[in-house]
Amino acid sequence: MNKEKTQKNLIDERLETERLLLLPISMKYCDDIFREFTKEVTVYMYPRAAEDVSETEEFINCSIDDLKNGSSLQMIVLLKNNQEFLGCAGLHRANTKTPEFGIWLKKSAQGQDFGQETINALKKWADENLAYDYLLYPVADKNLASRKIPEALGGKIAKEYDQVGLGGNAYHCLEYRIYPVEK
Ligand SMILES: CC(C)(COP(=O)(O)OP(=O)(O)OC[C@H]1O[C@@H](n2cnc3c(N)ncnc32)[C@H](O)[C@@H]1OP(=O)(O)O)[C@@H](O)C(=O)NCCC(=O)NCCS
Image 1 (tube, rainbow, N blue to C red):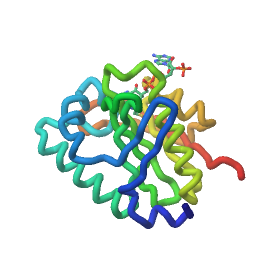
Image 2: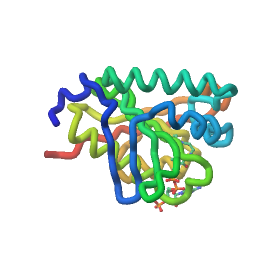
Image 3: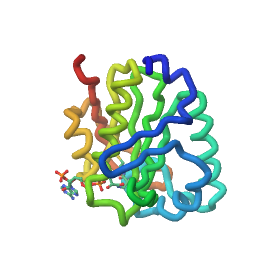
Image 4: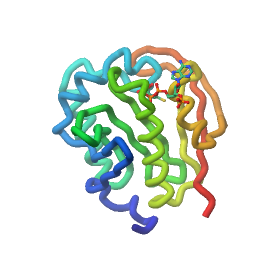
C-alpha cells in the first residue's frame, strides 16, 4: 500500500490486533453506538451523547462519507473472538500532515487496556499508509487512563488550552504530538 492511500477510499480497511478487530464504521452498529455513547463516557470528550438515534445515524453517514473520500479512518472496535462491540476509534483529518486520534470504549469494556491496543493499531496503520508530520492526541488533563495512551507512544505535550465540550462539560485539554517511527 502506498502513501497516496488517504486520497482514496478507506471503506475496506480492516485492522487486527491480538484481541481486537477494527472495522470501518457502518449502520449495522447504530444501536450499539447510540446505547453505549453515554453522558458518562463523554465526560472528558468534545462530542456529546446523542439524544435521539437520528443524531447517531447522521454521525455514521458523515463518517462513511469521510471514509470514502479518505479524510477520516473511523473504525468500530470489536472483540475478535466473539465480535462484541466495544466502542469507536478513528484517525481524523487523515489526509493532512497532522491527523488526530479519537477513541471511546463502552463503560463495561474499559479497564482492560483495549484503548492502548486500539491506538497502537491506528498508529501502525498511519506509519504504513500516511506521510504525516505528527499525530495529535488531545486529552483532558484529568483523563489519566487516556493520557497513558499517547505517553506510551512517546507523545509529548505541545499545547494546552481550556475546552468546553458540546455537552457543556468544561475541561483542560492537553495536546500530545506523536511522531512517525524512524525508518
Ligand atoms: C480513554 C479510554 C479509551 C482508555 O481506556 P482503557 O484502555 O480501558 O484504559 P484502562 O482503564 O485499561 O487504563 C489504561 C492505563 O491507564 C491506567 N489508569 C487507568 N485509570 C487510571 C487512573 N485513574 N489513574 C492512573 N492511571 C490510570 C491503567 O492502570 C492503565 O495503565 P497500564 O497500561 O500501565 O496498565 C477509556 O477510558 C474511554 O473510553 N474513556 C471514555 C472516553 C474517553 O475519555 N476517550 C478519550 C478521549 S481523549
